[in-house]
Length: 319
Image (cartoon, rainbow, N blue to C red):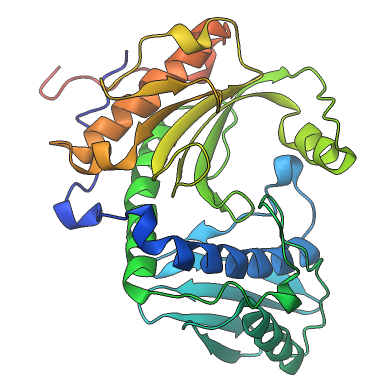
């Protein structure tokens, strides 16, 4: 396994705060809906990119941003600021509008955002139904999700910054096609994906909408790693790695650190976030997980690693 532990990344203790799901799940659920609303505005106004890369948000110096969105002769950007707890909408006019992030129903947030966009002469319609959640409630009717704890929202963002930095280091070691490090608001996770360069077998999911989404997302062989704040099968926040399509024997490969494991229900390797943040070197432990699980997929999937990966950097002091 390539040794990446010496790569320089931030490793301060307060960069990996505790984020117990039980303590912040109501805030998480509300924030999930808010990011879906903002993300769907970006989706509605930007050209479609392969693998749905026009969908995600991006980690910023203060939170999560849409990046620049074109609108006629103007551009605008929306950014969740998890330091001052506000959604900032900036346009090239220049005009700036602010929506405060505070305990409030999703329906109220949706109504105010649509009103603010209209006041900026941005006329956009989105599909009001949330995706990738059980029992979805249309945004304009959702009064069930209304929690917002600023402390946990800030911790969530701080983890995205730290994990994103390690993901960028991992991404830099690969010269094949790779996704940006981006935040998918549908599944509510931060991810980066490597591609073998080969087409994947066409998917045939039973649900026609899901089939369309998945065929585009997984049109080529991938190994994807990411961080998810928890829920469902993983009862708390976890880092993950999966290969699609999954090669034979992927689940039986040796991976690191020792606390990493293969979850047969999810079909992916997991390393719980708490096992990373409490490690002697959280960044080093995470890099070990990313590299070893990638190698599990690349070896069993017979990827052309010589043409896809950068050679290891020479040891310090080597001639």
